[in-house]
Image (cartoon, rainbow, N blue to C red; front, side, top):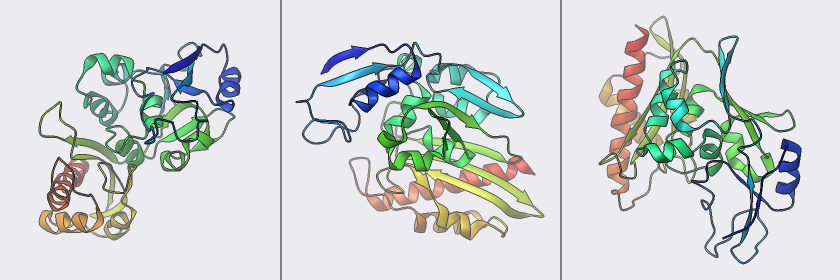
Length: 275
């Protein structure tokens, strides 16, 4: 339950409230995510299930701009605005559209989606693959993976930067229906030089790298410097690198197979786009 609802007039005021145990609130779709078994939030003082909400919508943290080839997205920009933007790279517009409800997309923000750290996030795998950078209050910058390790200590996300790279980035979601919990969320970034993989980043969610989305760095190392393997060999490589567990969506072996097939096809799609 929300005990106090604050509308700070500045980022500094928001940070001060956060230091006293408040919880950042942007769109409002994820504030209860991450609760522990006793109903409290990790890193937040236990107040019998009550929280102090710090509303961020008045701080001017929304909007999309381009500088020097890179895109900067304000943390409070809605996922619907991202999906509708004709300027942004196709991968992130596609990823934002993976959330099936337009009502939720109109409420949810990209900063809130990152901060929630959902194991099946449709945004984070693509952001990890694309080499995204988080610009934090206080002037520091973080890679998304570093932020996810300790979000409460990292502070407040102000902007997300999508750097300008010469390769191709794609993202995917695989689910039994558009409303079902996904069994695959992934993002791939690929560069090819002289027929060989010169740069690759692969982000995966849905339990493939543990409880949080992460990079498949072992697979990236195996692919770099070599021609992209044929499809079946690539599927087997990916299956050996992902480690999902069984859940109501399917057995661990099924989830390995689906992730292997879908991520392999995404890598091949990126390679074909570079030819």
